[in-house]
Every structure is written in C-alpha cells, then in structure tokens.
Amino acid sequence: MIDEPATGTPRVTLLTRAGCSMCDRAATELARICAEFGVPVESVDVDQAAATDPELRAEYGDRLPVVLLNGREHSYFDVDESRLRADLAR
Image 1 (cartoon, helix red, strand yellow):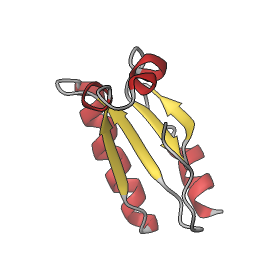
Image 2 (cartoon, helix red, strand yellow; image 1 turned 120 degrees about the vertical axis):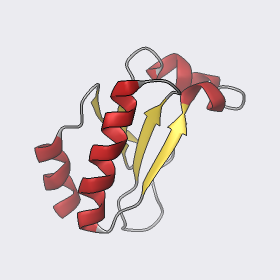
Image 3 (cartoon, helix red, strand yellow; image 1 turned 90 degrees about the vertical axis):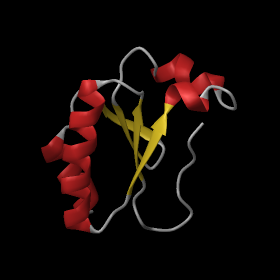
Image 4 (cartoon, helix red, strand yellow; image 1 turned 60 degrees about the vertical axis):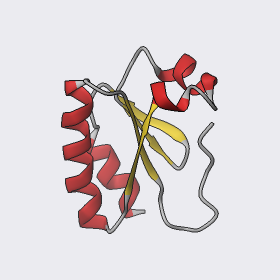
C-alpha cells in the first residue's frame, strides 16, 4: 500500500489506469491545484502496480480515479477541489 510521507510536505497520489478518461481529467485538475501549493502529484497505474501490490488494485480498481492524500483516500471518481484545497492549506 501507499505509505504516509516522512516529512511535513503533503503527498498527493492519483490512482489511475490506462485508457480511463475520468482519470485523465482528474490528473489535469490535480496538477493545476497542486501546482498552486507547490505539491507534486504522483500517479500510480493500479494495473501496472498489481504485479507488486495486488491489494492496491483489489481495493481501488473498481472506482478509479482515486485521490490519496498522505496515503489515505481523499476522493474518488471526481477531485473534491474545495476539500483538497482546504487540506493542502493546513
């Protein structure tokens, strides 16, 4: 599973899969929002990650895209922009 960061910098991860148009939209939106806060976005394809972390695809694979903040589920299907902005501002 995705671990929490050791530093105080928030860690934003987008769980995605190839060919997912909702994932593409979420990636664009996340990049825009996180850039304003100077926070990088990591993208993880759950199908590719399944070779080493099958639990990731089992847990999240049927409701992509999923946004994780510091290793915890923050939103899925859509980016909850107002909530993400509030959480990144903390």
